[in-house]
Structures are given as structure tokens and as C-alpha cells.
Image (cartoon, rainbow, N blue to C red; front, side, top):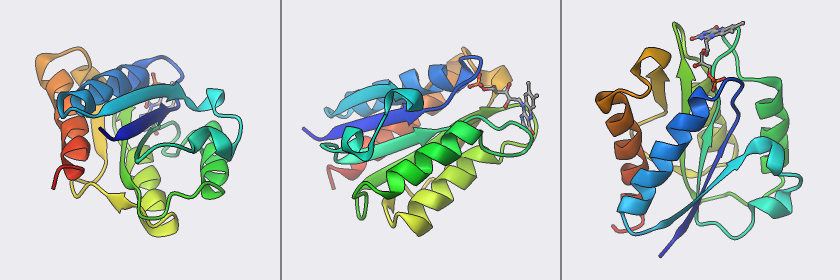
Length: 148
Ligand SMILES: Cc1cc2nc3c(=O)[nH]c(=O)nc-3n(C[C@H](O)[C@H](O)[C@H](O)COP(=O)(O)O)c2cc1C
């Protein structure tokens, strides 16, 4: 069983809901998923011990949050090279943050990212059967990467 960390920023809880369903999807594949808000991660040591990482951030002002930028500098110091990865975020109309996080994980950290790209879910899709399924399927896709 592999261990995946789902770490996310959230202001009003929407990206947190996504994180919970994504973690569930990872667990459906027989792997472990831990959930953490980025604020609970104090140093790069807190990122040790995982085989995969799924980072989430909502879009505000067509950007990632300031906290997510700080977190990614912290993650840069962890050894994420070649680790499995995915990225996601909630949004209403433009949704840049998920892709920005995904690109940092792919091009800067050189992680083995899920080939679906980032999961960007419109706020209006939260708590709908399709929205929940999209999150679960994304978690499953990351989890299944361990089984090939
Ligand atoms: C002040 C403000 C600015 C926002 N800017 C954007 C934006 O540029 N693009 C976008 O797609 N959504 C934008 N949103 C919508 C949020 O991304 C959306 O509400 C999201 O679900 C919040 O996620 P959270 O609950 O995890 O913080 C903005 C929301 C607020 C309140």
C-alpha cells in the first residue's frame, strides 16, 4: 500500500470538500490518503514519508493564494523528484490556480504527474453527484498509477 498526501489551501471550504472526495478516490484503489491543510505543514520534514502528493488551491484574483506560494517554496526543499502527483482547485469563472500548481509540480519539482492535468471544479459542481464523482475519479487515477 502506497501513501498519498492530499494537501490543500482553502478559504471558504470548497477546495477542502474536493480534497475529501479525492482522498476517497485514492483509498478506493487500496492506497492510503492523508489530508492536511497547508497551514499544518510547518517544514519540509512534514512532507516526508509519502509516495505521492496531490496539492490543491482555489483561484482568487486569477492566481494561487499567497499561502500556496509559500507552501510551494517549502515543498521545493522536500525531495519530490519522481514522486507521483496531481493538482486540483475550486473556482467560479477562470480557474487558473490548479493548473499553476500542476505546472510547478511537473516542471519545477519534476514529479510523475497524472496525465489528466489538474482537476478544476466549478464551485457550482460541489456537492453534486457529478462533482463528487469527478473528484473521486481523479483520486483513483493517481492511486492507479501505483498499480501499473
Ligand atoms: C475576492 C474573490 C476573488 C475571486 N477570484 C476568482 C478568480 O479570479 N477566478 C475564479 O475562477 N474564481 C475566483 N473566485 C472564486 C473562488 O475561486 C471560489 O469561490 C472557490 O470555490 C473558493 O474556494 P475555497 O472555498 O476553497 O476557498 C474568487 C472569489 C473571491 C471571493
